[in-house]
Image 1: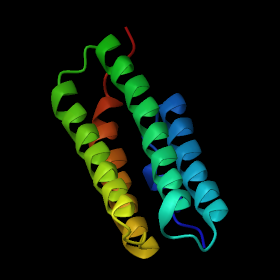
Image 2: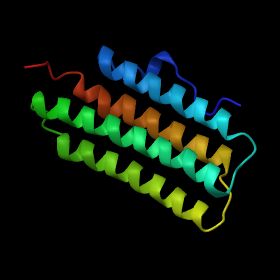
Image 3: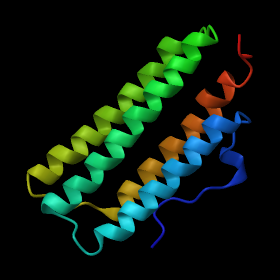
Length: 131
């Protein structure tokens, strides 16, 4: 099962950011395939932790680029990043409490967040030229 689907509508027009977004979608799908039937315990938690770590690294890179370009909505954008990282933390706490990872719910939630974030927040950033 492919968890996330890339489509051209997710592109924001900044080649490096689009590449990272596409790599993230590919990573989530690869890690999900490696997860196999394990939906609880350490294997599922490792999946979410890896997603969380990759997202945090991408966000740091993206926020640095925004600072360099003088992006005026950086605080709002960063708040969106913090929200996703908090949600992933909540998913980890659920797994640590013995609750299973619900693939469909996780995929719907993450897909919706990514589409919204890429198309609204990241697309605004596209209008800020490199200095």
